[in-house]
Amino acid sequence: MPVWTKILIVVAIAVILTAWGWMLDLSLSAAHAWLLDRIGHTGMRLLIGMMVFAGAWALWKETEDR
Image (tube, rainbow, N blue to C red; front, top):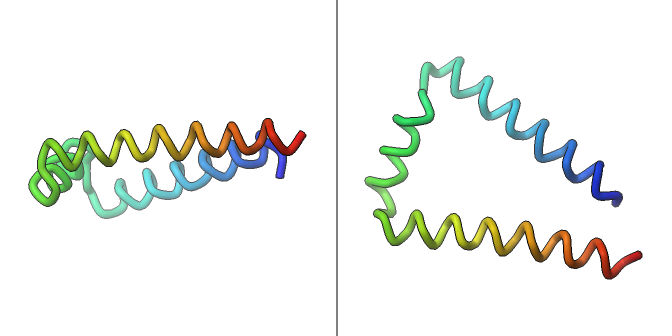
């Protein structure tokens, strides 16, 4: 799967989640506060780190496939 296709999928998911949040009248700050209450500051740092690692790994694998 080309990189641009993956980017389009991520953008589409982001748009869908944003629209869903607006429909539920859930602001980003409320979602952040809710997640922060659930997993704490350390959990947020781990979650962000895992997301960065997963993105870097996906890009690395894409360049290996070429």
